[in-house]
Image 1: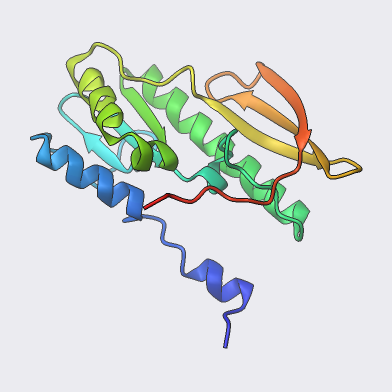
Image 2: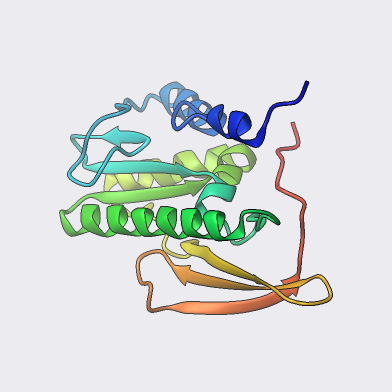
Length: 182
């Protein structure tokens, strides 16, 4: 017997996800020590390097509006659009507030963790050394999708740190979600 949508959604964990665990193991193997579930002035990042004031987030492609892999649902459009908008606004609020307080914020998409763990570790190390590591070039988020005729969609994207910067793109609708290859 298959699970209802509600039962399926209830099984999704807010922490200790596969990409988080993979990242934590890789960082630990690299000799980097962090805290999990540690409260900061703007929420609870996935990983915290408290003494260096570095917050690390692993954002799920579907839940946080990855411009490469977000797939707009076909049912419950109003609910899921609101959920996506709320998640992106929370991401923006947390990032901007932590940076205002002198923290370095490093955000990764889940696909980055699976596809390029050495690059992810390098960015965390750069943030810890004060050389950067923050990903400002990859901060576009899907905030809304409009379904057009003939299987096309208009995707509205905003910069995470500056909601005034946005871009619209029209492309063929895809229903294929990103899946790791291993």
